Length: 111
Image (tube, rainbow, N blue to C red; front, top):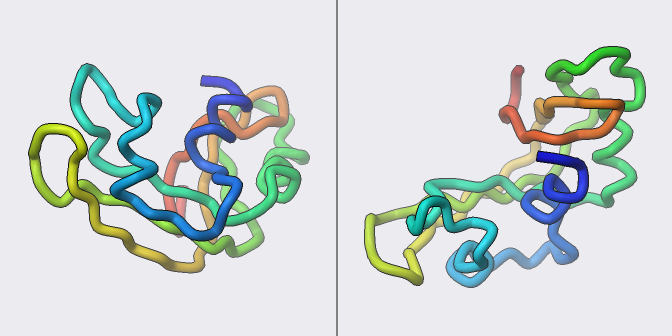
């Protein structure tokens, strides 16, 4: 995965996330199945990108900034469109950095 895909999957251009709508997009369908969960970072791409600015190697980095997060969690195994529940929180995030760019969302609260 690269920075462009990371942005597409995790940095929406809205803070109003409707999990049942957004998770029906093709990028969240894996092997014909709805993705189990996805976390959206309610922030600018510039702020998220800054997490990796000091990463000298390709590794996981824990943000020093707390982000508003919205995690969509599949609530049942069903045909598309799959049902999702939404969980919101504010926390630090862990991202995998490659070439000083976030490329993978690795976790919430710790690496």
